[in-house]
Image (cartoon, rainbow, N blue to C red; front, side, top):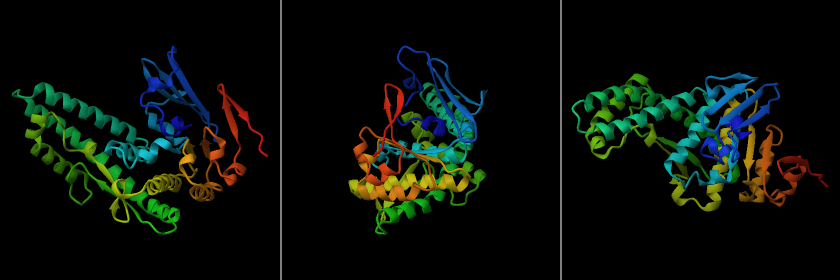
Length: 329
């Protein structure tokens, strides 16, 4: 479900990890309430194919027009204390839900960045390297400012929901704020051409250092998402319990934002995370989603659920690849 609703799996970094050992391919299928048959086919040597109702989609992101979900796993608890790339990836997943075309944009930026790295390494010292970099920087700046703009807008839209949930989960005692810290210094005015010219100027100003270190040190790949609790950097000063509350608030904010934009409420997936939430947080979460959202909870031990969650759920056991309904007393 997470794959069909986000195009990603929190349990794997590479598509081949989703294929059984000794097999050449695997397929994930799902049928939506609207009758759309969604498929993602993974091939060991040929990448992936995405289909809706049997028709192959040229853009993978178009699959998200039929189904959306928000996934919260135990791995998300590393969001605060992890590296900046984890926070960028988290924000990118949100942007992708809001604008499926973003998938192609971020891929294009990554490809350009990789090619620029190769150019810095292989052509450093050659007479034409400056001209080649000028050409690359024109494209990199065009795509880069579009990535910057989409990330900035998404985080701004997420902020009020995140602030609301942090207050609710902490009984009004904590204020959560988010800050998009660009990897480029851009004017305050949100203008694509102005931003592009500023990014080109920075790339040019840093060129000597980049040729010396073979690194691209300006652009969206250097972005950081600042997460602050009561004005203090959460990753440094928040307690373990506060960090869990912050991540839950961010996930609920994501759920609310997607629901606000689209008619159908997204599906909430809680993957092996309930054991990390105390009974008070579980009850607040259940109260928030019970009437509005379909929620899929996975757990290795049913005892992690509070009695309220247990009574409100249909319990299914997965055994040897089969789903078995569990009788509830």
